Amino acid sequence: MDGTKRFCIDFLNLNTETIKEEYPIPIVEETKDYLSLRNLICLVINQEVEEHFNK
Image (cartoon, rainbow, N blue to C red; front, side, top):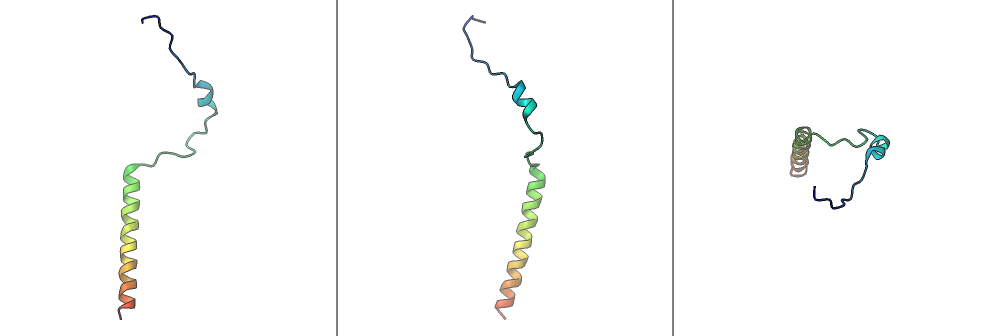
């Protein structure tokens, strides 16, 4: 250490007040699976709508 002053923040009190898992970070694989399934459902619905109107 060179003896210079450094700014330090103590987050211990903030951490005790924080609500755990209020907005958990989503798991990437689950999100990808959800979005790919959603896209598949949209594709199927779009195809059915097109077939219905093209009759």
